[in-house]
Image 1 (spheres, rainbow, N blue to C red):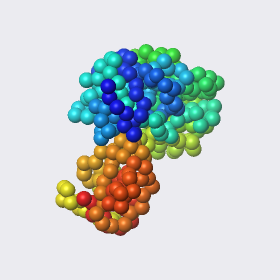
Image 2 (cartoon, rainbow, N blue to C red):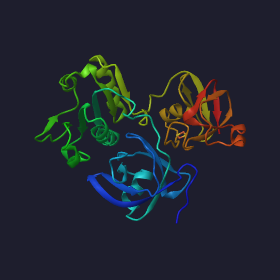
Image 3 (cartoon, rainbow, N blue to C red):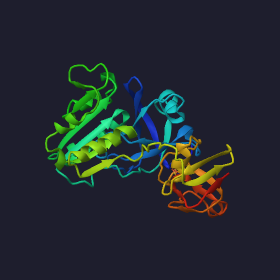
Image 4 (cartoon, rainbow, N blue to C red):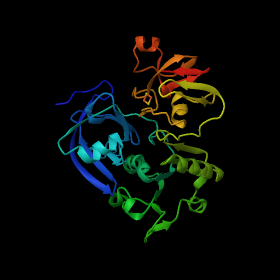
Length: 322
Ligand code: FES
């Protein structure tokens, strides 16, 4: 019997596990209490049921529609969370999840025309929302464009047959697929594109491309899943950040978070929620000025000792980190 942690108080039992594609599995979970969530949100999962390793996964199921709570997980080589969830966790095991989190949801967007764009594993919140729209807003005109590497990588392939869908495959495009990558001409073929609310989820460069191109085509209501934060180029000027372990110095442009500065300079730091909720990115500042937007998981004592949540810390001067 494992125990809850403060971040992950929801105990769920694995009912079954289904392989979706060569490297993606869906874990169907039973929660004996009512677990409130919205279509498109994610939860933190306590990896190996310990408090110190949390990973964020989209809830690929749909409230009020799906029989189980589901997590759809791509196995990443040496990924602490995905290796455990897709290789070791078995039917009957227990997982601990956080409250559902995130703003990438469609229930607050009352438009009658939508375009949902997904690439790879970014389809998980899109399927969650597609089911929700079918059940609760059946009159909404929903177009979906899903980009994959090759036809075998279509996650939820069977379920997609019930919804209108454009599939784009970069390699080995078979019948029913548009060959290549998402292009401006594919976007232009979407009826009434400029009148649609557009939501996208996938790798950061893909979402950036979508944003630039749909806005160029007149879209004004655009949303992307911020959970997949891009790793920016390392800055060459700005505030100086010095880390003592490893000994390193680099720059953080004014306005960025400490987490962005660390990641763009390849300093190892855990991050799951990126929103000041999970506590993964706890870091100690030895000297310098900074502003914080969340201290949710830190005690008073830790804050006095200079601990911050890197994702919620904005450097205001040069900083030295422990
Ligand atoms: S990544 Fe979760 S608190 Fe910073």
